[in-house]
Length: 164
Image (cartoon, rainbow, N blue to C red; front, side, top):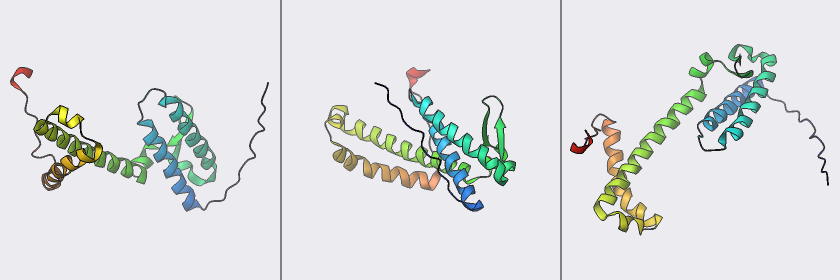
């Protein structure tokens, strides 16, 4: 049996120039975040983001946005210029996201490590998520307080004797 699906009708939307600028940033931010996904199979999903971004930027080139859009020769796709991106809300958002993720992850992982050292791995594995949070939350708070005050200034890695 052959299934036939009629093409979707074209959608026409109207945006102000300011709204288009926001849309450009939103689509580019989404594509940048999607590009960070390194899981198997993510390349194909990311390619769809990239294709839509390129299509949008190509169409917007003709609507007065040409000075912030360029063609990437290697992949023959439209993208925002590096000059625009480095000064954009997209870059600001990515930088802030990376910063927040770094501090959240290091705080959580160090708190979990400390609790596991204190109660032991078998006890940790026996805890449900709520009990784990009850143990780690006070430790996380102390790390947050320290990191907020001093950043990574006092953070050091101490190598064990047997590690070289």
